[in-house]
Structure formats: structure tokens, C-alpha cells
Image (cartoon, rainbow, N blue to C red; front, side):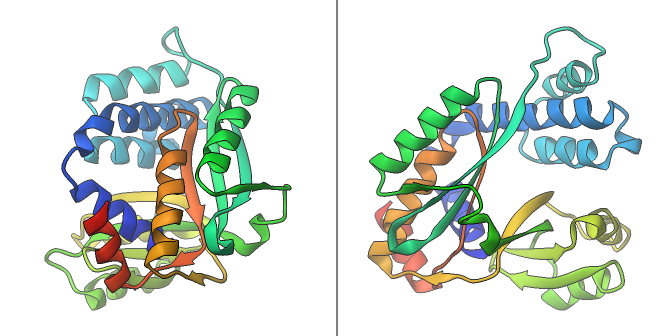
Length: 252
């Protein structure tokens, strides 16, 4: 998770990221629709929807788009799509384990696109269960580091069920059990600490250290997967030093 978060942050700083904003908006809208369909359109009674909406707002998705997505998902407006969740497993260069979460209305299309992206970028597909055991489902709240120290964040979430706070340089990751994530982000809000996102994610139990060449190959694969319309999240169990990250980012 931490390495992936660093790479995502680096990418968002690069020129040209606006070219992919349309894809990001579409994925955030899809998350909102699914959350509203699953738990209802009332944000106060559906924390998953609340977090999906907050993430979309922080990513500058227009409010009208968000409102329509909530209504479509909640059955209050026509036009909603019955998306299904499916997870694929595989390996990247260096034996790095990869989990790919999709939301799709066509599983055959998703499977073909994921397999093609994997094989064209040095990855291989794996059987269900052969990779997922290396990851645990966790709540992950991302907090911008500007204006706050690690101790500030730690003190705010210590009694809310947080397991650890990770310093990623520009951001902090607060990791918790899934059932404690709402309490964690509520504790941050009450302490006056803004957060960028609150999501359920997969955190690896072991990580694979990568050199510059290995990191470049893995990042290329992750970028190709994340560029697919049906792919919502990609998780990989790699670890990359800040020095290697800077070199790869400079070459990207």
C-alpha cells in the first residue's frame, strides 16, 4: 500500500495528469452509484456512500455529477447500471503480487482487458486465492502532511481503533480494521485534521523490495491496469525506497 501510494502521489504531480481526469471522474462516479445501490442514498446512514462522495468532491468532481450518481444508485433517477465487483489476481515483475479490483457490467470484457494488460506489460495471471492470502482488508485514511506532524495524527486516532500511522512524506496513511475506519475518520474530523480519502483497501503482509529496473516495470504494469475503465483499484506488495522512487519518477 505505502509504495503504491507514493507512486500515485508522484503521478498526480506530473504534468498531463489532467488528461486522465475524465477516467478518474468516471471511476469515482461508479463507486458512488454502487455505494448508493448497496446501502441507500442517505449519506448519514451509509458511511460507504459518504466516503465515496467525499473522495469525489476532493477530486473536484462537479456536485451535479455526484448528486445524479447518488440518485441513480439509490433508484431515485433512471439510468443506473448494475455493476458487479470482481477481483483478479496475478504477478508483476520480480514476483510482486497484484490484486486488481473491478466494477463492471460485462465480466467477459473485464477479464479480457485485464489479461491483455497483464501479458503486454510483463505480468502473469494467477489462480483465485494464490495471491489474495498475502493481503488483508483494512480501512485506510489518507491525511495530507501539510500543517500536521505524525504525532498530531497519531494522538487524534489513538483511541479510535487505528492500528498504525505511516509517514509517506507528503501524506500519512492511517490503517485500521475495516469496522473502525468510520471512527478513525470521525476522530480526525473532531480533531480538526482534514483527510484526503477514506477507503477500504488491501494491505500486504509481506513486501518485495524493488530496484530501479524492477520498480519501473511494476509501475508500468500498474499504470496500464489503472487505465482500464473497469479497474477501480490495483494493489501490489512491493516496497520501493525514496531514492529509487525519485529516479523512476524522473524517467517517467
